[in-house]
Length: 332
Image (cartoon, rainbow, N blue to C red; front, side):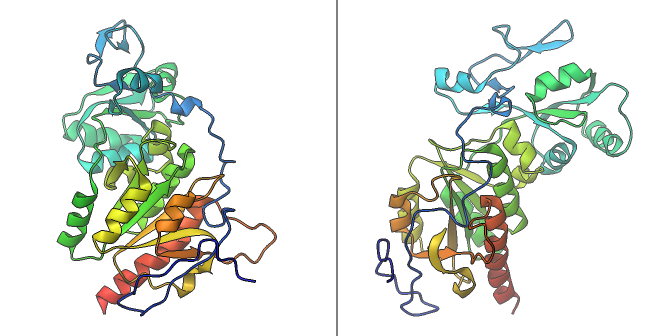
């Protein structure tokens, strides 16, 4: 018997008539798995960054200190100051390379002492070309700056990553003459999954990623590293309420798809419309209130013994198909 717990009266799709993808079940399929969905705080979550409320760093004994003598800030600083913006460290060769390409302001490039071979020389040359100070640092200094991220001997001190808004994302899509494709991350707390999801979104040509202010991983050094630098080219929107954002997107003409177990095979979905696709948290999936507001519920069919995919793996599958349908139709 069909589970009608989340079956909705579908909106009329201008391309497919009155058809909706309805399904039930709360166990995550496309969006589950990953790293266990644990809401633990890792070393990577300890932002080695300077909150706006703190003074710029002061050179002293070869180290970079905030005015209160702490070696950069931590995530706790934002809770104390109420701020969520940082001037942060970007670590890793790929991440730094994409940072340089993005044109974002960079204060300094730190390179491990004696490590001037391979791709590092290209990064140093680009930094010198842009008149960015290049500082040789010890392994210990780089470890401290990157906060546990695998820095590969390179780290950059960059201006903060600016958040944007939904209207700006839609305007950017319109300027390109493309149908909007927006990714919504509903409560993804693991920074590795968040970074990988942003990477998938950027590679598929999505115009923006929406994340909630609470119960979600923000843009941390671990997220930047896991995105392999894709974060530098991706618009990120932080909102107070995902459910309300879904409603707002629908009013702006977008069709919202929820990637969750119990839905219709995603191969049957028509993504050649202005679309937003919701991917849920590692353990809980998409929240009930968000799911009920989505137009369609879609799933990736599973044929093996394991019944779920990591959220970023599922996103790569669904977003690739959505992008192909949108871009293929545009090309024709």
